[in-house]
Length: 291
Image (tube, rainbow, N blue to C red; front, side, top):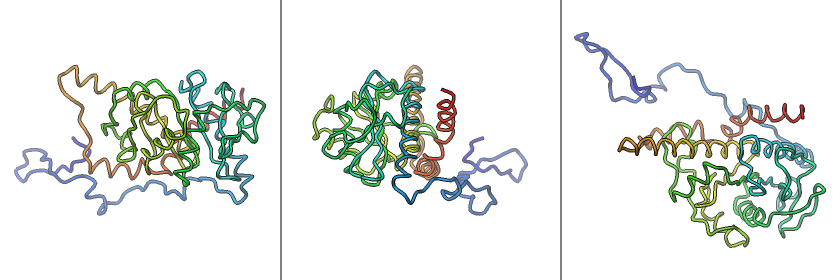
């Protein structure tokens, strides 16, 4: 039985008859268990920007360890940035060439709006592409505090198709009308390409950079990292589903616009992204203490 259908019995007693009414249409008239609200899930808040900086740098360091654990590191490629709470025109980023599985808050470097490293750990090498992309995205999106980009396997494989994500799973509904497709122009070593990426993103939280990889944005480190992990898995799922469907001479079944929009409200919000990342950050904290 479809989970979106309501069953009734015919007057003749000849078995179930499926009506066209959607299950969600009757939710307002039924008692239900409500999902936690944003105020219930314990998102941290700070009055002191220096205290916030210390906390968020710790979360950023864990983000690199999480990316490494899931195989999102690729040599020296990839970067995750955090807008500095003290000077919002600057951001913290990984030093070029530093191994992600060993990243600590003390290793991170602070880059100002001119692209100069002004604070941070002993390795103060800066990946120029990190500055060119992330400075422009942070500048275009002042509400965004974290930006992640890497060359993970399924993301870059999917990016070679030159198409956007299909909404074929509940998880992909998190990106319904919230993901862009950008035709990349190669390695990003000038500000114009960074500006073009920022423009392509618009108000969306993610983009597929054609022939390049994925980029995700969040108001918190946690949401940004979760969106990246979720998008990578969505790319993997679509690659598998497309191949299986093609092998049978068909195509995948798409989720309806109405259902996708309805599901997005639950799985695609900023609090949902932050909360969904809690388990993986909890494990990363535990593993870092054991290291």
